[in-house]
Every structure is written in structure tokens, then in C-alpha cells.
Image (cartoon, rainbow, N blue to C red; front, top):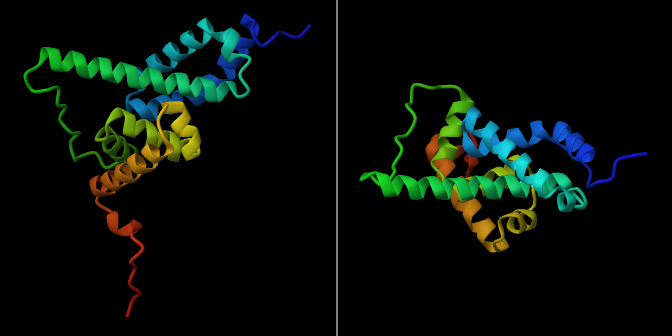
Length: 175
């Protein structure tokens, strides 16, 4: 007899097959391997608690991604609140040093310059290749908010990466 969607066995199968996918998204959101592992495990724990509902969802991976993203945003809000409560500097974190030339490090540093919500939108929209409508649904905001936030965030990323000219439409042909 095959396990039902609500069973522990079905959850274990989901976790085994989806953990790497969730971790990759978590890593892009967090920018840190240890924090990404913690976020992935917290997400799986929350899914397990609500597996009866999550396991019967039409797209359980999309449901898991929503839980992951909301957990990330909630943790970031809590950290910022804690930093503001315990530091006089307002919780400002220094930017990574410029000596790192690896593209991954550079991209993660650029993503770290975005607010957690903007970072989540960019990762979901462009890394996970989700539609504007899906991102808006996951983050419980309007499609216009996703579009405007992504547009501003991409502009910030281009400025941070120092190659805004590669993305402009005003190209001049060589004379």
C-alpha cells in the first residue's frame, strides 16, 4: 500500500528529494552556508508540523518555498530588531572587503546590500524563475510591489557590481 500525502513516509520522501533545492534557495537568501542549513532545517520542521496541509497542496515545493521565504524574512526582522535594541550603530553591518574576486562572493555581497524582502523578491523572481504573480502571492504583496521592488533592486545590483553599462539598451556600434 502506498503512503498517503499526509503520512510521515510521504514527508520523509519529500524532504529527501527537496532538501537540496530548498538549501540552494536558502543559501541565496542568506549568503551563508551555516545559516542556510539552519533555515532549511527550520523550514522542514515547520513543514513536518503542517504536513497534513502541505502534503496535499497542489505544488508542495512551492508551498515549501513560501515557508522558507517567510521564515527567512521573519528571522531577518527579528535580527534587525535585536540589533537595534542592543547596538548604538543601528545594526549596520560592514560591507565585505573588495579583495574577494570570486563571482559568487561578489554576487552574494551585492545581494546582501538589499533589504531582506527585496533580496527575497530578486532570488524568487530571477534565480527561481517564478512569475511576478507567484512571487506576489508567496510574499503576500501586490504584483506592482514585486515589479517596482525588483526594478529598483536590479538597478542597485548593477550599480554595486559596477557593470551597469552591460545592461543598458543604448548601445553604440563601433565606428
